[in-house]
Length: 405
Image (cartoon, rainbow, N blue to C red; front, side):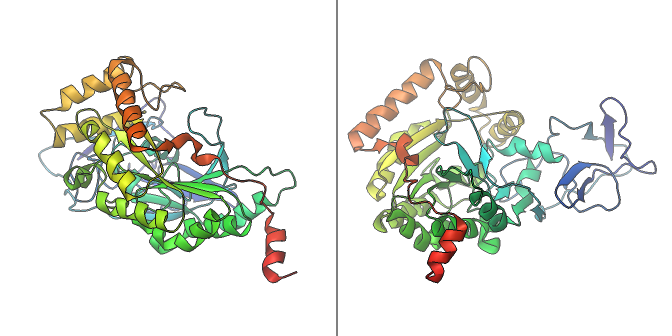
């Protein structure tokens, strides 16, 4: 049995005859509206799981309420009926009818001004993913919903060509697949990321990518072509060299050894490639920092960077659950170190400190990183977005050149 509690006034969209945990998606010509309740029709985007369970191939252990939810649901035993606990969770995929595709930001600590995210949600299922809270904007949970309720940019090529064709468009390096991985398993079937890369390559537009997937090698032809004109850079994110840690922390990503092989293949093809040690998790993966850098350098990485674990909004709930499930004996110590590096909190979102933290632990980590990259001969990873912009041509001009006009 589930008890449903409303925060404030009962929403008018909830059907009077019964309360169902559905999230209705109403499609319009130019936008979608996401909300709770019953409407003209309901798609299977309601939360598929309530409670706490470790599913094979999933990082989160629950579906916590999003911070914008107007109601909360909890399980209760009435002595009559209990919902059956599913053995697996079905993945649901829907088009994201976005009106634009290039997103701008003014953050001083990410190294880029514009980005494209081909997908919302990510079945890589990394429990620590900083993008999880964005699912709350859709009326979905940042937990298991984020891993199983996925959206893709259906009109990616059309939208991108329209934006690149604007008379006042200013060419800047685009960061591709930053919020969620552009090479997550869904990309193998839909090819949205490749379609975007094809447009950028045709227009000679600079692009940077970061991924945990070996699928990026599928697009080696495009990446090598862009690399010849210094129009691309790639970072492979490696959190741990341990398959056991990877299995629960980021279950559907490529193995650490596979990622190292990707670095080698990209480097051999002349594609600038580096390693992002991210996130560094205190008392779980931090001892591997130097080993990851060494392995990546030997594989062919030319630059390196790192990010300390970030726990914004609902991610802190999910990460604490993960710790209690997999490392109960270390949980208190891990959170203590995180709090030390975050000004006594689980997370500090201030620009300038959110990526690497503050305090004694953060300074020690920074010193270790700097010594290691200097010893191994890495370049500074912050320069990976310094790509050429002078070769850009709009889609119309690019098409004429392709046709030989």
